Image (cartoon, rainbow, N blue to C red; front, side, top):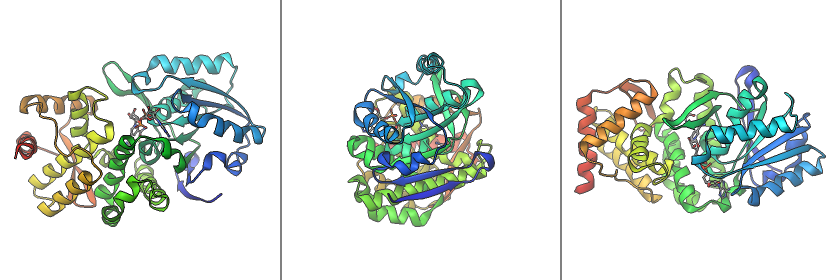
Length: 364
Ligand code: NAD
Ligand code: GLY
């Protein structure tokens, strides 16, 4: 079986990301593990699609496994589901040698990773991401979390997986809407650090939308490479890693303002990137042409390009709320140019100007 390999060098926490087609049936991958006690954690949407495929491979290799099927959805990324995992592991007498396998999107990946980081003070886990967003973002870099009633991802840890297996074929059952939301995060990598990749995306974005094999594998591999390069320099987000949050403050405001689930995270981030581009242009960094190119590529995949009109005051308070949840400062990820981002404090005046412009663009 052919696949691309990306190394994530983090000392004793180093791991490999494999990207390829139909890797769920790749016996050689699972044969490499000396461990023989796996727990597959997935949900009731993914299980009927991929659990059999994965367990057949484990069966062929005579690997021991048990599976836990959680309920689907962001609303279940909580302490209750986490407890179901702990109960299952304890009831099945899993010791520290157990390896958890997260088979699913970002929700399953985040919660399984957090369970792995805390069960018996930490056991190994493998990420098998099945959404585009999780393949290019959440499965890489070791952020794990559950939600709290006070906000998203507030309880979590940095805990790297043992390995990441990206089977691009699994995307074939994903809805078009989820695919487009994942593409927003791919575009983000080009915008923040790699202008050549951005130019390549401008030419190939429709092929990725249609999941054409060669271009999709390339875009996923490139995204994982870019994210890994950032993570190895700043694993615990003390500085540089924050640029991965480009467009996210505005995006989080949209998600919260509309109520979680109305826009997908990637949809909100896509629109948030347009707003962050406006901010960067008002600060005198990117020019009008660069701003238009960002908006155009997001428009081309059919993602929303205009923010919801909550009214100016509500917009400001939503942004303040997100800032409070994160670190109580006024820092934003801004573009120095297309392909280069940095984090800088932004005055309230410029922020207000940005929101006004974005809301007015919608009207004009
Ligand atoms: P998700 O996990 O909820 O998956 C979206 C939907 O697609 C779900 O209904 C899921 O069951 C279904 N699904 C998954 N794979 C499928 C497939 N192959 N075919 C058909 N349906 C499939 O959402 P997501 O967008 O993957 O992830 C969002 C989560 O990731 C959020 O909780 C977010 O906080 C988290 N996240 C984490 C990081 C990180 O660095 N850890 C980064 C970004 C996002
Ligand atoms: N998704 C942003 C990060 O992993 O840092």
